[in-house]
Image (cartoon, rainbow, N blue to C red; front, side, top):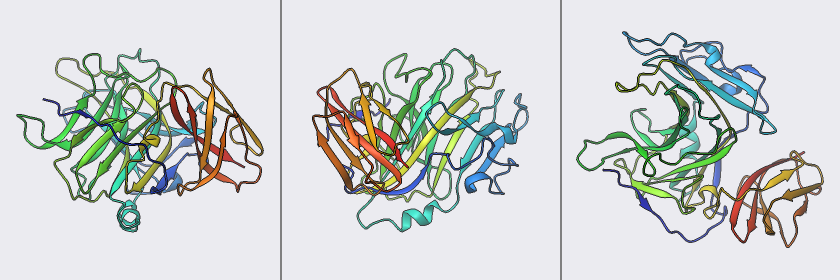
Length: 345
């Protein structure tokens, strides 16, 4: 039933990518993002927040402004913590208005939208059926062009897309990415997940821990559709067989949304089970990379995809001459590559 195909793509860089939206939450204040839950009044960072217990009859009772909070993420920065519904119905959405205009102003031929996000699923010991993730919506808000969510109870990662599984009507479907127990992201740590949607071809791709670096893909049933909104989301996760009776929380950080002419998702060749440490971060002068693997090369890209530094055969990089800002550091070893965010002060 699930039309998931492995892609084997040639390696590219960030050169063609254009950053449309990014958020690391560090400019916000610890506490509630919004003072209301109707999604009508912008809160911190101009984010809108909607929380619902679901239509009656529902057992959920905990829809409050406190469902979306800025917290110490443990990821050397602040992050977004979302609390899900505590019963059989309910949802949470957090977004900024105006993304459709950002997409309309993209560079010609950049027909791929790419979303990347760090997410910490906790230890997966909760009994909550809640799910947490991020979706790319169309203008009407009824089609998920590409998205993902993680189940709190199992840490299983799902691809979400408007599609037509064999034998089913067209609609928004969740796709497990492997045979049971599926692909489970690491516990109590941040993993970077990426999804993309190609407006021209309708191709949807997901990349992340446990997935072949080239990604898994399916064909959307909504090609030629412009993305219009990026949402952080959470849902009850209730099923008839396994009712939800408990809320859970999950922390998200370092959202980046790009328009690109080619696949630059997670650096294309990124292998997320290769562990690299980067310190200090934020940095002012020399940055040191620590790993059990030998570091072959390091490349540093600015937010527009331009290479600003490149070294080989060293695990240290001097950033003292760079302007303050956010950079992406691509680290290569014999066992693969990883991309880390670096803040230069």
